[in-house]
Amino acid sequence: MGPITVTAVIDFVTVVFVLATMLSMGLALTTDEILISLGQRWLLAKSLLVNLVLVPLLAFAFVLAVPMETGHVVGLLLIAMAPGAPFGPKLAEISNSDVAFASGLMAALGVVSVATIPITVALLMPGDVSADPLGIARIVVVTQLIPLIGGLGVKARFQSIATRLHPPIQGLSTVLLVLLIILLTLVYAGEMRQLVGTGTLFISVAVVGAALLLGYALGGPGKGTREVLATTTAARNVAIALLIATTSFRDPGVLTIIVAFGLLSLVISGPVASFWGRPGEA
Image 1 (spheres, one colour):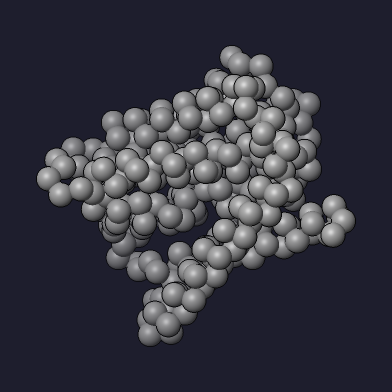
Image 2: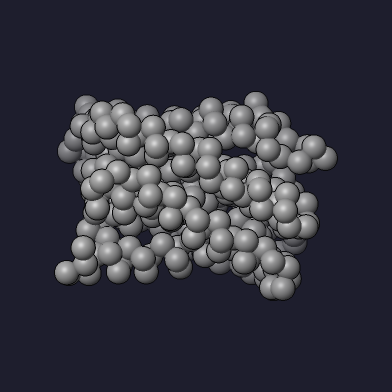
């Protein structure tokens, strides 16, 4: 299989993965869950602040302070700008935290990021990097907002259909995620190995760790909401970051750092959520 064919396959799998993930998210959520999230205004404001402003600025500070290849800079900034990981509620379930808040927050971040991702791309991307904020906005609207709203509509009007559709679509999303990771790892294995010793992995771990701490600190007085905001903030939206990267940036380093960051965020957030979910943990 030639490189053009492999690239086309990766692009196709990425698009279908994002569509399936966002549709699955909509089919699983209820209006009440979203309203619960939006109703806690001060907590929501802090959640948006840490996810949409503080984490991108933290990544931006790192790329200013530490010399990095342009592709790695773009990849790190893209993943930092992409909030609302679809597996946020799963982490909340593992940590035995506030799953309803996690679901509502995920939906809120998915909607708001339609505007914030293009804006932060325009403001924070290096001047020598060619980026099309309006094109990125169209990508986010078509692949993230529309299927999310469609899923929410089906859930609200035809709950029994949504209940039947959600498991297979969620399963498809999981399979495509695994397939995408395998494809990207095989195609960019050389680039992944080259990350060792560059400092980018250390920076990724630092950003994930700081995101966990910031989320926990700003998550309010309740243990459940603190844990949700911590893990949701650390687990960025790899799906939309990969889609933007594959359609707007062809530098292999961009995809490499996004995949590496995504894996590191799961490796860190998953065990933390498991620790919090252990019986007797306060």
